[in-house]
Image (cartoon, rainbow, N blue to C red; front, side):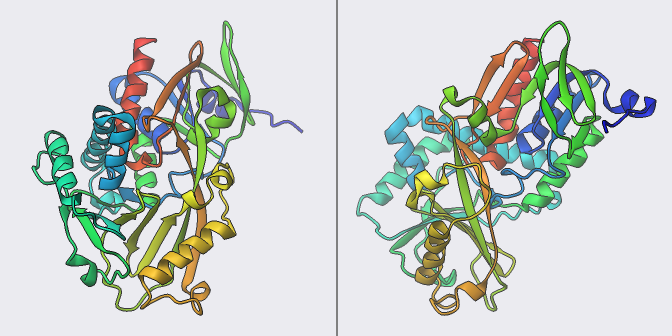
Length: 380
């Protein structure tokens, strides 16, 4: 039997929205907050089908990073130096905005540094690092963002690598605390947040309405911030879903590793999580299989991650004990564009699609959301 709305319910939750946001993850929350900051009298409603965001925002690795040296050098070669620096600047500025808006303690931020490990260290790699530092200096305000840190590998208990480069500008966040802080801030700003509410689509016309499980919500502007899920709704945009699988070890006695780490152009990434290790990635072992909207895990990728631990942290992991040493396994959903830039698209009059954070949603969404808000205000 259909739910019969009371006067109180309709008068509180189904009032017309100036801006209606579908997708309650980081991008949706940042968009709602920044719009309300500029237009405090406007009604902003944010809707998500789940009680908490379940795509990427609470299922990532919790990196506050702007990119590894090998990734940046590869992107500069592929897309040009200017395009690479544009992406890196968005990420770097996003991290600073994250910190200034919410505060480090509230989101569990640890400025533990970012490192990249290499199984080969070419003779000219330090020259390439020097060139990269020159490109990054105007953005980051330091002449040496990255430096060789080979001697730290031993103290970090890492084995099987020929070299390591690092910086002290990156860190790690607690993804759950981050989203929770964003949800609280949105409500403090006056955003109407409706989590756990299913919708059945929208109708455009003289009166735009979103049909939901509890009734119709009229709106003026609609923004869809479901990231990877938009790839199936708008395949012509060329955005591809990409699952990022993660595992977390049980507590490890005597663990000294501290920081966020990348390997293989960023396809492997790991960090300390208290006295545990969180490891994710290996998507390049099965690109086709990981182009999915399934948030589960696969045997292929999990085995790759397990073998990585056995190779590079053999004092804790072996073929005999690896399965018993893993406490958590999960998948999260990313959306990828060829340029590595996020994509904002007008899908129809008064409807925007914002997507493709390219696995860097923690860092890039504050800056991307500002672009979304500018477009909404320009076309109000």
